[in-house]
Length: 96
Image 1 (cartoon, helix red, strand yellow):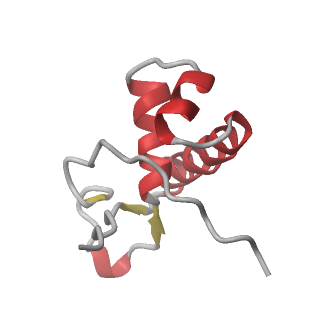
Image 2 (spheres, rainbow, N blue to C red):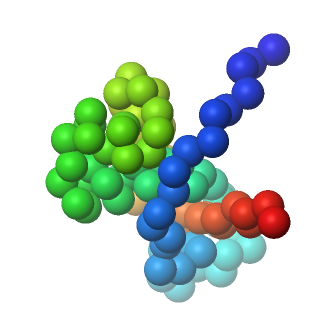
């Protein structure tokens, strides 16, 4: 049984909930889910150019956890770009 995830600090949100290849209906595409923490890791490290240690602190995770999240996120993005899949980004609703 896997350990439960610790809460992570997520500040950024995607501009859209989906990116997909042109001229192909969504119903015909394989879909890949990008989790909130994967989006945030990409945003901090690849867009904002933070060092992994700094981004890990910002997200409230260890540097190794951040590296694992980044590896997963980058694989998903490249899988979509190279294989013509839809990248789905639904941010989780915060509990009130």
